Length: 413
Image 1 (cartoon, rainbow, N blue to C red):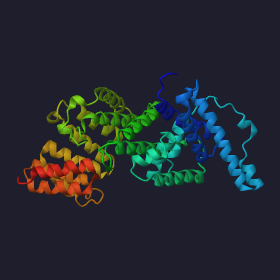
Image 2 (cartoon, rainbow, N blue to C red):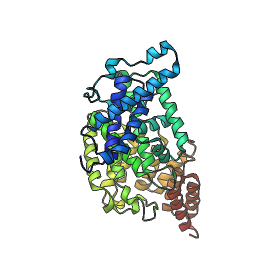
Image 3 (cartoon, rainbow, N blue to C red):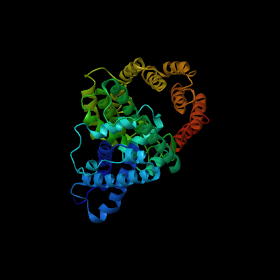
Image 4 (tube, rainbow, N blue to C red):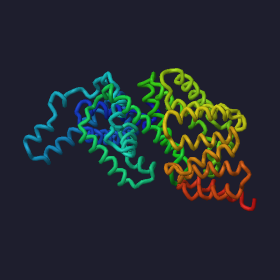
């Protein structure tokens, strides 16, 4: 196996190995630690010794041995015969072949459901998903979310403890639980992608590796659940949105708004795949929010230019989203689309109704949309103030610079 992308291979194998070890021995928290140590061993050994013929079996074997060590160490600390007996692994399980075939039910999907257990808050679901299913180290996850590694270590440890305390079995949720749990899985992947595509804080507009990981994991879910329209819609949404990434920043990392982007730099292959997926998803089953958002993204991506964007159709799709749920960001995007389709006054009128909604009224995006519509309406003084308000409310440096630049351009108008 020459010229193997070891990092990519390990990230693909990580959930399979963890799933195999948890399914065989239980103890999710210790199994996750043992799997991470097996991955570290592979990083240290494989570049010099070569990738094994069966890398998955190698990792399962190493992780199983490490888990056995961890369990026996814990037994020694207990010093009580009944606890020792409870932790003891039957000899026949220790002797089980490490490269036995995976269970018929896919362990990766079971892991995703487990990491998105309702006992965990969203931040912990995200962290545990990236660690256990994505194969990212704690340090990588901490860097992605701009928190100290010690903070992320505590967050992941608490999440694993909650999973342990819940005594959740390692299996697919029941039919009654599955829909809600799948919603949590998709929402977690959606949040990971959004943080990668538009960072909430820090010096960079986007974190490419985080968005790419969200897409990879969503592809995994789509392979396992190809007939689920919302899974298909989410994958389509991510691809259609990420397709614009190459044109979103300039040479110095500065933000370039969609209207000014060089559309020749958009990823045509990703757009084609995303359009095909959303075309496949929309006619099947009940329409869900990810499908509708993907349809909106497709309209943006397929427009030859900003001026040729089908804004009336985008308005109609946002109105579908508003009927599906009370989401203030959808309402904000709807107001912006109305401003583009029917004129800035119509959009600003809708914004007035959102100004009292605390969920969005203090968000920098509210003021950015307001500024854009005020500028379109020929009110540079109000637009300049709104741009400044937006800049004060964002913690992302490229966004701050862009908004300050828009305000400065209107000075003296």
